[in-house]
Image 1 (spheres, one colour):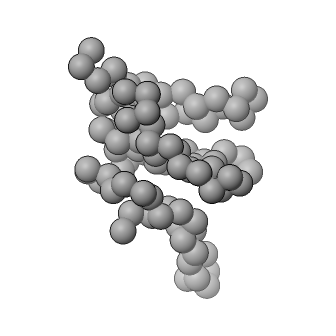
Image 2: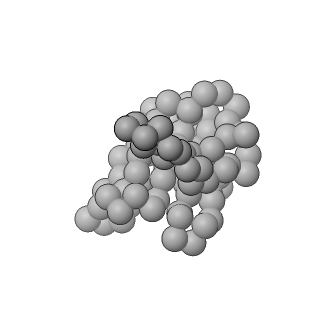
Image 3: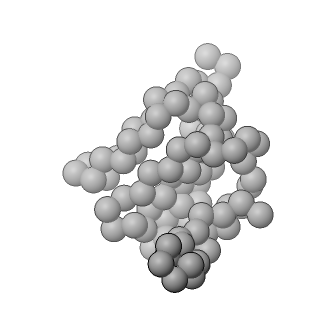
Length: 91
């Protein structure tokens, strides 16, 4: 089960925020969270998932926008944009 969770390091209590619909092919290495902590982007080199806790919706970024080899993710609060440094699949 692939998930995003929060852990209180003092009490060791944890809460699963999101269980991903599709597992990562390899271990995720990138995680960006907006300031309100309700939008999460988790990525490995070949997989990317966006989760919106307000709407409880997930987006399979690499599949939906046809990208691969994700190297960097930036969440811009001013524009509500997520910027990805990546390649197009097959391109």
